[in-house]
Image (cartoon, rainbow, N blue to C red):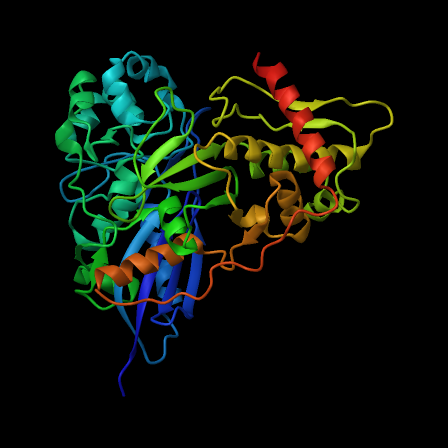
Length: 475
């Protein structure tokens, strides 16, 4: 009896890896995840040992494929966290712990990037931020030059993991375009920027389209994962690009994902960037397609802090929305760690404003939820193009009916929740199928839209009060 073809998608996240097996009809046949630590040896640092990624991936994949009956894995793809840096030898052996996107020590070298000639800065088409691969490489070159001298490759996280699978060095355009080492309009490595900053071009890996094979699964890796050796491994994509692919986002829609932070994403047919960009512009997981992204730093991380500060459970937090959005009340600006889009200021700080003796714990909890969603709308409105006809929402921060309704009211358009919590891993599975020249049919990625409700006018008033407070803080 013939086996049903299936495809393995791996999502290498910041603190956990997810593995999912989808058959050709899009039916999940197995899934698992494993956690690993992000270490902070001193303030402003965020590192992970790549060996932890590998061991967690092996455990997650072996569990995901353990009980497959009549199913044959045809191919693999890896998606995952963007912007990190893994310095490695020619065989892929890491020379230090990986720097992740949350690491901010490269802030000390950003003045060199901001002094780039205007023409060169324009090719990067993105704000200069410390958590991106290029500035991280610049920091290591200045502070640990012996490691750079000993390196053969400078990888993004998922690219290191894929080399562990295949023994072949590569990256894809979605990750490469998010390094600040990529000429976005030219769709190639920004060699002139590298020369100007005295960064080693030879460390950058070859670039392969996301759905193309980047090698085959090595026998040793296959044994560790419980997979057949020799199957194709796709180049893969950054997690946001993989999510956009699985969500089947249209140009008329915006996708918003909410976790520790939040992202608002719209597709673009051309890589047209603002001369002073406040949003990100990256390649999608498909040729000749880009996406613009507003990155919000303070979403779940701010709500978690509020819960701890007010000794509230998640149920307490969402229960504060039971009566909808009030006509007035405290305003919460969630800039607890600075903010990216649209203020681009790592020093600005927020908090509650407009508190009086009549307000209590529930008012502060409600204001925190409203403030986080207002912050996401602020980023959404920073994107170019026409306002979206609807918003596709996903991520752990969008799982409750109360939060979904709040987002619909504040955004003023219907929101359609994504069905799967593993949308990035699903996108990786789609890329795996492409690498095997096979078809993977996913069912509808979204639920029925939730439309703005009775709190729409109050939500608009809340948003205007929020903007006034942001303007006061950033003046």
